Length: 351
Image 1 (cartoon, one colour):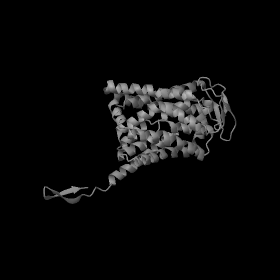
Image 2 (cartoon, rainbow, N blue to C red):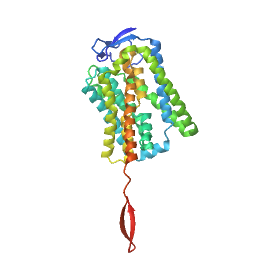
Image 3 (cartoon, one colour):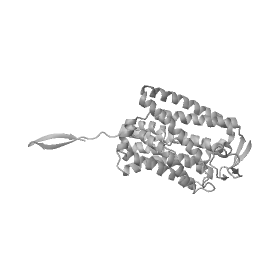
């Protein structure tokens, strides 16, 4: 079906039934129009299926890294988790909304950015936390809690912020978003069960999942190129690139600052920073692909790919800076002091 896609002005009839999009969307010409090629419904279904499978595998692998005992330990002392949740669902959605306004993004671009900003933490945060010598237990618990809370927080935040986006209002497909969120909890529970009752298989599941994910990513990229053709260049516009690069860095910086204000240990500060700046991009991509028809969302469902590239690049820069600092940090100078013990002066070395 040949179609001309309007990325910035779209109307939706109000139905949240993801199975009945049909003609609910009224797309009109605009200066940032996407000239769609021919959208093959078979290819569209293949992309949707691959997106769901990729998300499922990702969440099973994430669940295999979670331990119930560690989750309970952090729940008993929830200060770090609470700060991280506030940062995750407070800083990132607000930053995404502000960037959308500053760069005057169109409605669909703004919604795409908001969905990324409202997503919970993902696997990347755990990997980068390990590289930064962060608190791995806290990182995994934070990812777990944000994933569970996203079931309620993500639709709520999207509902609130979308009121400030022109021609969106109440027209977000919340049913589809909730279904995609449920797709994260079920496989995550499977992974936790594997790690709890058959821990010897956890590492195998994670390695196999990584191989499948890499192959799925390549397949999605190739099929997407066939499906959307040259319209992919719309995702590489200066405004989109600017927001994709700024949002993760804002998350890293403000997450670290917030945890510093609440005097968390240094390792926990780095952990909160990573958890705030790294979202579950697989979830974001699945939501965009499954809840929005391709003739409406167009190439924007590939925005998470651009976003995750900037997440990785900026995280690697921060890791490099940290490693250099750690390597060249001056050794603590020991000072000699004298303490009186039982009436005798004894020499004591302190850093």
